[in-house]
Image 1 (cartoon, rainbow, N blue to C red):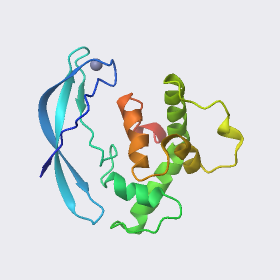
Image 2: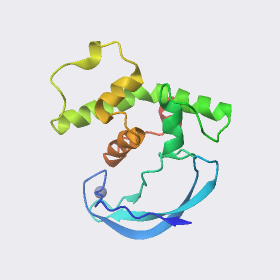
Image 3: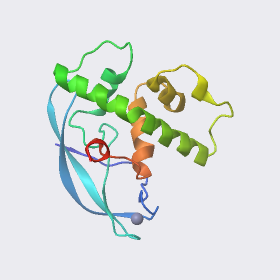
Length: 167
Ligand SMILES: [Zn+2]
C-alpha cells in the first residue's frame, strides 16, 4: 500500500479555495507490469465551497484502472508497446483518446491563453495529428499525459467519458 502526498499546495478546482484534509480513501490501479497496486489517497474538503475532492497522484488518470504510464505508452505514436493489458483494453484507450483529443486540445488552448503563454501563430491550419497538436502544449517527454491531465483536472474541466458521450 502506498500513501500519496503531493508536495504542491492544491487549491479547490471549483473556487480556488484552500483544501483541508479530512480523511483518505483507497484507490486501486494496475501498473505497467500488470500488478495491482493500492494507493491511499487523501480526501479533502474546500473550506470555502465545502466541496470534496480527492488528491490525484501523477501516476493516475481519473476513472482509469491502469496507470498513466501505461496509457501514455499506448497512446504515443510509434512507441513500442510493453503494456500488460489485453488487446481490447488497448483499443478502448485509443478510442477514448481520439474522442477526447479535441476536448483536451481546447482545454489546453484556453488554459494557455488564460495564462498568457499561447503563441501568436495559429497552429490549427497545420496538418498535424490530434496527438501532435496536444503535444504542442505539453511536449513529448515522458509524462506528457500527466501534463494534459493535471491542469484540466485542477480547473475542474475533466469529464467522464461515459457521461459526456453516452448521455
Ligand atoms: Zn471550493
